[in-house]
Image (cartoon, rainbow, N blue to C red):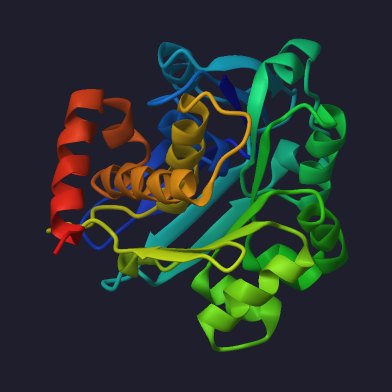
Length: 303
């Protein structure tokens, strides 16, 4: 069974208080797909421009990610330039250029449609997410959507349509409060299920994540890191690892225990992302290294 990841691929310029790097591989779909491939075959639907570095495309191919769904346009690739403060929970977007992403219409080939068991809609405009949903029809066993505050503010009606079609919604704590107009995360998580999804994940950054089901609840801490180098893409890696693990189970339906295990696997994927610029730590990550950290994580969470 395989994961289809759709969303953005970007060229990032990132500055932290320790270093700065340019022309990095970025974008929600890039991080999610590279994390997902640790567990399951993964395909990508996205768009890049003529300026997209060949080494980035080679990296994706080198991970055995199916890149047949990546459209190469005559324009320039989506670019993001951001800076993190001393407190890495705070960042400033210095420049953003949507470029080819602005008019992108996702196209899912027949081959990708037939092979998809998990439909992961990485952060993107809700209309793009709806386009992928419509092309896949009822084929995927499970559909996951990520979103952000911008879409809640400027595309709420379109986002509402997405929520009626997905099994799981993932967003961070600030976005959950914004969407549900409450300061209580537990209240927000429970009420969001009324919008359509069977399950809700609320990410809390360094404080872990919570998942809500039908009368079910689970929370897990983040993996404790001595140092965070660059948190860009951690949330995307989290949901990519989550989706990849679910796909690896080979099931048509998932229970809440499956989702709890997936949340823990996503948490560890995100922890590696934070230890380097871009996808560099994920690129070099071997399953044995992942499994060692996962075992440590479980020991930290047990009484």
